[in-house]
Length: 94
Image (cartoon, helix red, strand yellow):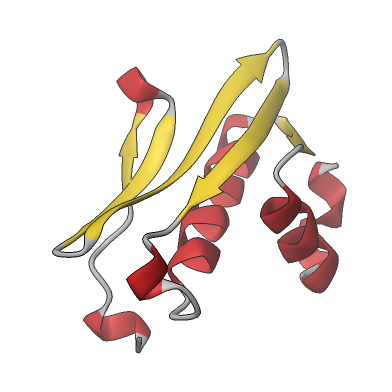
């Protein structure tokens, strides 16, 4: 799915998550804070939308927010950990 046709990522701080609403369902990246660390335990994308860059967009937005807030990141979700390995520019957040 090209980035310009993808629904926007929305931050829902009251629910501690980043979401993309789609006709196929809700995609999300959940988080919680432990002091100065943002823990990212779960990323979920509806099966019909897997492989279209939605999970990457969610994680990118979550990491940008962590950077903006001056937080470290602990990626307990395997997808987030793999994303951070593929994107060396995020390593300073670990």
